[in-house]
Amino acid sequence: MTSSTTDYSTSSVSESIFNFTSHRDRDLAWRVFGAASFLVSVPVFMQAPIVRSFPALSLIATLLWLGLGWSLYCRSQTRYWGDIILGFSWSWLAGSIYWGWLRWEPLVHIPIESIGVPFALWGIWRGWGLIGNYFYLGSLLGTAITDLYFYLTDLIPYWRKLMTVEPELASPIFKSALVQIQTLWGVSWAIVLVNILLAVGFWSLRKKELHWWAFSGAVLSTILVDSLFWIAAYFA
Image 1: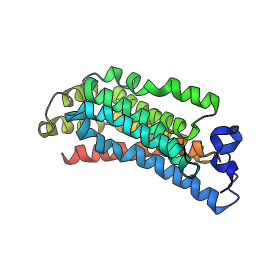
Image 2: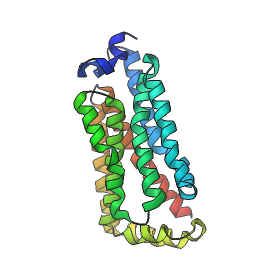
Image 3: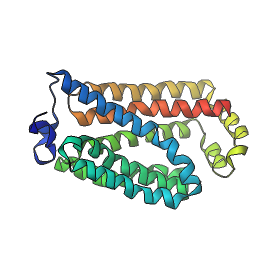
Image 4: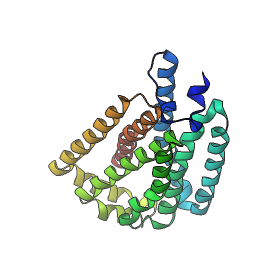
């Protein structure tokens, strides 16, 4: 791979533009997409039990993600992966803060999850860390749409109840919430919002810049995470 496609932190925005003239470029785009999808859908299940029992440990683990991301970012061969991990560290930090200490109040969820937005926008403005910043914003968009569904279908009371009981006592609350979403109103809004996520995600895949593929991976994997959550609730 040439230096023009690896040392993009010191060049202009054109450094991340890929014309997909080779299989290598397309393969790299799909790997970035896959990494974004993985970081949205897998670590959340790993973080959940940690942040519930040891929130301070989850918060401190943010430093490990930052260290790993920066270490990879400083090497030209792994810069893309370091970039996306640095963006992921904002999601991990916000998740540690909210789910560790503030999970009883849904109203502050998105404000806490948005903790890294000023930094992400600054990075995009400066043309730095585009893959990680777009990944973070894509993940935030998916989270915001999920929260919107909770508000539109009046699931917030169930959210609050779930946060005050032990996991083994959550089954009746899950089942009541499922009844709420299996109405015409609940199903209709699910279809609308899923289609919004699909439209945004596939629109991003039409771009040839790697950061848009990271954005798409984060947005589209939101559908997978939400689906797994409701499947788990169904069988709870």
